[in-house]
Image 1 (cartoon, helix red, strand yellow):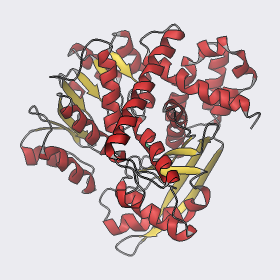
Image 2 (spheres, rainbow, N blue to C red):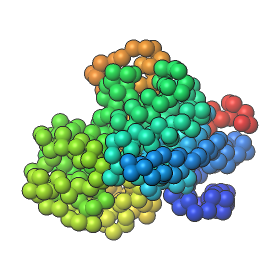
Image 3 (tube, helix red, strand yellow):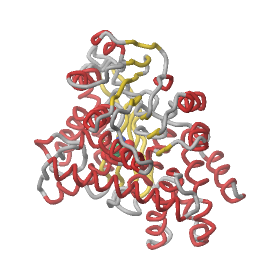
Length: 446
Ligand code: GLU
């Protein structure tokens, strides 16, 4: 690392204490940018990196609500409006007890580059709450969402900031949030994406993140002259992203043999297909945040408190959450002959594990490139809302496929151009950065 980048990282750590995930995301990105900074001294002269690591705005608020027993509950709500150089802030809302300002800053930082890679005009943002949907009734979830939007509504809007779902926020929650926004503003606009298909949602949005990950993986496999046919795939998580991945892998002739939750993982050697795919939706809606019920229902192995990376597979797709694939997991995957690790979650692989996989010559794609299909179709939802028109599933899927191919090409050609052929992390970071950085230069010191 150059002195400049070292100092920058040290400054970020000093100025943002107790935010390790934000430090990790910044370190990964800025260390890939050294070659760009050498070739383009204007970025350094204009303090582009120093500006990128400072959110344009952070909103933090109290979310009071009353549970089914009549007790008052207080949660913390956030929206990090990270960067609006190339479009309105765009990014999901996460409802999970692990949510802190630092987690959302890391996610909003990643989102800025991811959104840039999609080729669509979207800035970076992220928000959420430490609210835990686990064990909550539907009514409690609605009351929480209404209270959350009662503050958030004044900071968002179709041309300002367009939130969507993330962990703990799916179609149901987006519905409650949208209903409350509409009531407060007396306006029917595309202020959120991931909406229901009857009220402005885009077809394929629920599947988009997972489908996009598989399209991206397919492109990576193509570079090695292979495809999904007959491949065994380990997936972690069991939510919306995993659900999309499973469907598309099945369609392309592969077999997903694992899913996981905070309770452990299930191993289904016959593959997760047919009714089992629909059952994933009930698992998520049960608000239990666990996968053991799958093992009981389909009579397959359940490994408590363990990660699926110990199962021998050809492809691994971490689709749960940040930091769930460690160096020891990377080593087991390599030993078992895994050829490809494609991040479907945001930053599921630690920095050290990433380096181990890359050094072993395994195809490795970072989430900001591979999982960009979700936000890309959110961008297509915004476009349809602006036109007051709906595209068919085929049209949306076609565009999604094209975008994922384009992101793949950007990663490959950028990595080559900067002397690191095959390094998707470097390709994605530089590819996402340049568009944002040049737009910031054009817009002056703001
Ligand atoms: N939460 C998703 C992501 O991490 C989607 C965001 C969106 O659609 O705005 O990219």
